[in-house]
Length: 140
Image (cartoon, rainbow, N blue to C red; front, side, top):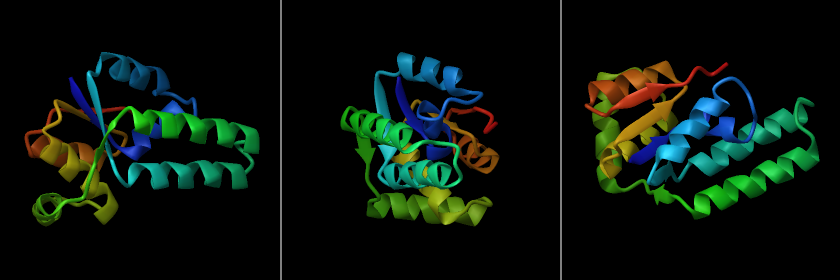
């Protein structure tokens, strides 16, 4: 199964919280993992915010970042191509999405993912409305 994920749900891999085990189950069943190119900076930003807020130690941050980079090495990094931009425009015209969020859905569609997983209800709706099989994992 070709699995594409949004950063909001993939961050559960590095910060254990409700939904982390469910994400692990999906990852175990995936034959390919597709990650939008913006996923790494978004997760690193979220991890650094957790450090600043005192919810994550520097050591835990370094460990999570190392695991993230290893995961990316084993995944298909989905690029923002002209066709992804065109798909993004269509999605934005028909859905209520933020510009960064639409890129995940457009990349998953372009890559022809078998499943897209997110913790964002607007992404879920846009993906499902576009014919992409989608699953929701609660953000909390």
